[in-house]
Amino acid sequence: MGTKFWLMVSGAALILIGVLIRWKTARYDLKDAAIDSAWTLARGRRTAENPTALEAKFNAIRSQPTWTGKATSAAGTAAGHVAAQVLGIVALVLVLAGLALGGFGFFWG
Image (cartoon, rainbow, N blue to C red; front, side, top):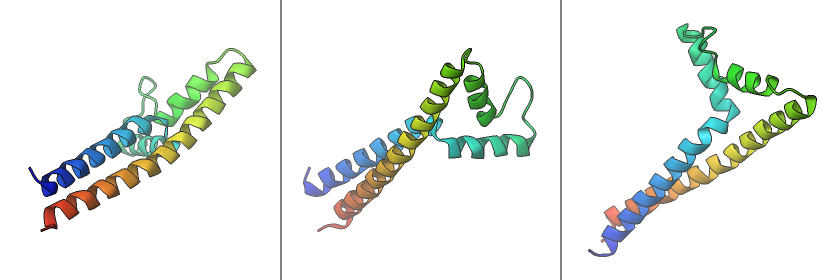
């Protein structure tokens, strides 16, 4: 097990970490929720029992009993979206670095 092997394993590990970060933060991303909502409407799958992703987020905010609770929930949703955007960039950098390491390990020597 030489350097080539460890470069490829490190690259695969970085790619896996990047994909896992993106997978875990996707539920907080409002752009993904908007795309999912549009896709649900386009397929005709939206019913009263199956709201779209944006409707579910809005209903969670609206269900708070007080204005303070609604504001706190809305702020939490916005903060989650910002964090998801930042971590999405981190995940992209990790995947690209993993691809570079894996490619370097594969073609080296």
